[in-house]
View (cartoon, rainbow, N blue to C red):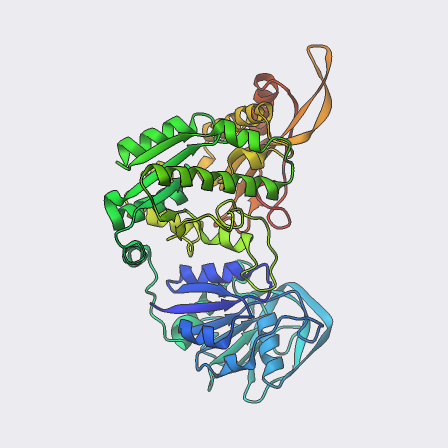
Length: 510
């Protein structure tokens, strides 16, 4: 299988690069710049992409790579900071630009180039940089420029080294997808062999080799990620898989009973149901810090799984629906990028959990997981459901978790989802939910002063959950949701609407 490694220097767009490459049918992975050259060579990539980043190549502590990376004999594409770093390491000179360049720019073509094949002179590109390449490294030439940047596109065709000062991975660069395709197929000579059918066959065989004759537990959360994991493992090991679905008291209205029926009846999975609601709610009592919540929940899940493993006579392997965004947000695998939050199944797990983890979806984005689900015959309505966090409603309560707060957010959440469905926009949204705030506001209800809780309505659009925009819901829909919540959910007298995108916010509040 063809493979492209994306070396991450801390750009907010790194995940977009990896996704765009996969969309073009080539498998990609995000690696840190600290990865040894020997490890990169052992991974046998057919090309490297150096991401952008917020720093200057000449700045103190700026992320860098070993110059040996340019001796691997594979095509390399540098994007923004990646271009500047390549020029810097190969003998060029990078300096602060007297005129920074942010936003749209017109790309002027200087000469014919395989990288720019099919692009027209004056193409719209997206710039975001304050430095520029003043002197080219030996062997390089300019093939494209903008009004403020002479070295807008540089290349050394003899060694297959290319650099672009703009960001082809963002939608604002109109023909960015075409440029990336040129790098993959015209320059690197790759074949688009990444698809979900081949993924299923490869992962099924990997699971068989990993598990052998062992028994596997799979923790079902109620979402598509864990279900697809279960279906893949079941495909590989059959009856040696036992699924565990925990009622942790943090699920949506009617979610536990409805999903148990689907797992057992429609999908014919061996599923053990565990009622642990009281234990989870008790353990979360008085805990406000979201990272502590996630670690408490992760630890309790492992405790339940250990008990079920003992009951079954031993199960060495634990299968989880961990996906690529979980890994990216939980650990700084992208080198200088920051930890966003610990997902309960990644950074939230105790170090000594006692299982060998089986995580077949760890390299997939959410839309790829859904494609696998369809390939495996999962119900399309279930596949299309909005993502629901593993820690459940605990992370939709800002502040301590208790039975009263859970009741409020569960009832409010149910109203939001029902009204969104009734409005016919559910399938246009990535997520729609309610958040309960740890504040009270003064209100007037029935001619009496009230001092009650505040609920947030959160509606977002996204492709993969890595970036998102708030959805401009109609005033009528927001009014219906608000009226229902304040009238039907006891203890709430105010509803607000979240108009924050990701970034700078996250989709969930915790």
